Length: 118
Image (cartoon, rainbow, N blue to C red; front, side, top):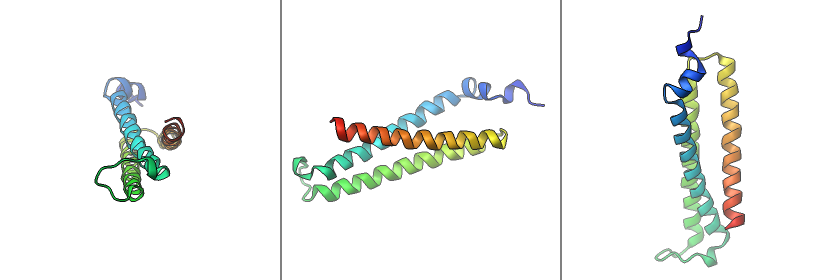
């Protein structure tokens, strides 16, 4: 029988789960903004005044690659944290799928906002 100390509510509020969620979201936003900045440089290389960079397009692709690596590392970290939970497998699968969906949508939204609004 599950005790109240094992419940998701306890894990979220009493054992730092909410803090971990916000730290993870912050990391995802920063990594996504790095990708968006690189894409902005790739799309408009003639408007980029990067001192000491002979080819802004290549620099933009490098920044995009680094940002994608950070997004992937953040995603892997989130999945590993979910896998360590001792909850029912169906709840872990549901959380993993929800996490995947939310991560992809946040990345898409931030890249869209960065490249179309600014």
